[in-house]
Length: 75
Image 1 (spheres, rainbow, N blue to C red):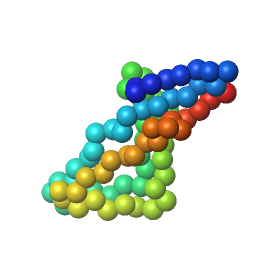
Image 2: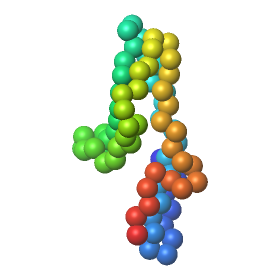
Image 3: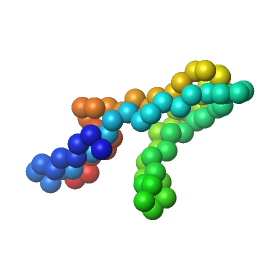
Image 4: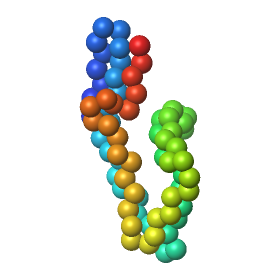
């Protein structure tokens, strides 16, 4: 977690971009990036890229999280 703030009944979670994934061998395809609570194994959020994204061997993928608006806001 980069930061989590609560102000006026609103909670905002701001996270650092996760480590990039690098394609190897034949590469891979993906459509969703999923945030998982590693202590419980529960999926808590996902990002849909709209269609399959091809990642060739040697290419990297980084989920670019919004450092200003945060991952999500709860009120």
